[in-house]
Length: 180
Image (cartoon, rainbow, N blue to C red; front, side, top):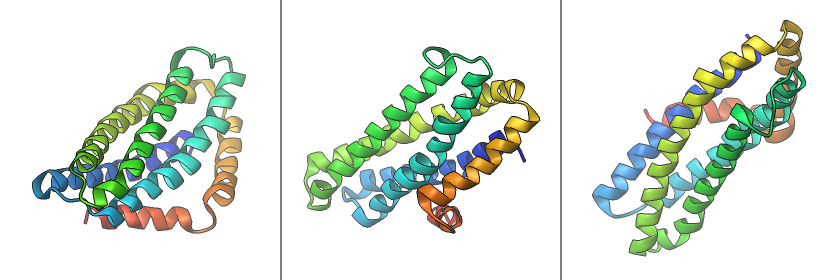
């Protein structure tokens, strides 16, 4: 399994959670209420699994190695992906910031949570598609087999350091349970 295969697999887990996000946004529209605990779990998943684990593998390892192999970071796909990672973080923060007021029944905050969930889901689906269809094929052409091996080993270290032993598997199971 290559480094990009691992990242694509993680994308599949993230896409499962996005299904749950979209279901939750629809539920909010239908009921006018938020399930703050469920949404807080989603925020935690995106901050811990998607950002601290997955994005760190891309930003600190894959993108750096791609730069070493000649891809510029200040323009092109890497610059675009880095910018989009920041946009995604801002959208997750918008959900998190509106959640306490939404839980209290504030109609504007409820609408803000619903809209932010929908916006984030659409945004992240497009982002994942760009990485899977554009960035990762380029990476696979640039990187040597030795690069791929080094990245796979480094990915394991990121998981251990950023989210801890066994947490990756727990998030996988949680994602499957979310949409079951």
